[in-house]
Image (tube, rainbow, N blue to C red; front, side):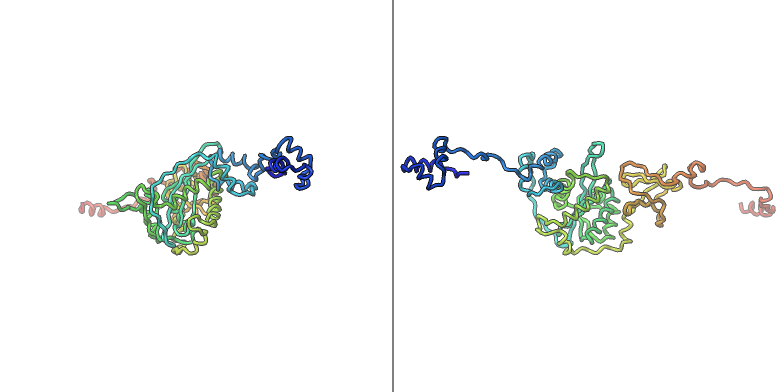
Length: 409
């Protein structure tokens, strides 16, 4: 390829300086025929000029467009998805490609005071609602419990079908186990599972939650009314789960979803945090967390009381689990250990054991659940009735006994 401006240079030497074509050819190394061509046709653009060179992103643009159609505009999420399919390029060209396709966003927020927690001082927790599309194509919602340690930014998330008090306590127990300890305080919003009401501005704590906090040894605190930014760390985590974990996520059932959630937490906690510049798992070692209590103390919060209905089922995480019909109307305890759901009596005796079912509104029957029901008309015990006896079994009393009774009356 000849350098630009050759035509001007040749014109100057031949026309203005009066040099011959042969002399210029010897000086420049350009053949005479080429010099003549320049004078006849002028300087032509290179045949490859204007052609776009190939990019490492070209073969992945169709995949990016597919992710954009799903509403995934987070470049970090797209970048990680591309890497799963063998993308070897950087994230910058991904951002450049997505930039022109991302819808405009307007962000307006009031200024707030920055607050940093000391080691082991505080954790922030909240619930978030995520969406997914089920096998029928219908969009459904699922709750996710999120908690983050203020000093190290170590996070933990757990998906749940319910946001009731028992689900909250179970998720907190799992979070404490994941962190390896308990923070001094836990900041939350004014959810009904935490406070029942306020009395002259002071929270009236929900009884079970208060008892749990005392036994675990942490102080609960609630943020100001209509000021969610007070717990900004966990608010950002909720958005991060929605924008980073959920987009494009594929899962078989809720067990698979939670397994992926734990793997995601492990990955995020090993990544440098944008604010601290440190890996959360590294700073976690510096957290001055209170040690976990004896397992017998918090193990009971894994169990939920459930009353057996008339059809001999107990409800747990949106699924009906069967028990022998003789337990109809009784209150039992239900808990999950690994891949099994256990239904036990107060003394810990196992009534029934089932494999965890992740399909909502499913009925899981127990073996021999209704054996003997028809014979006893569904009554689990013999009701008290009168008894006929023989004449010789009737007690014979003397008349003096009756006379004494009449005198007393």
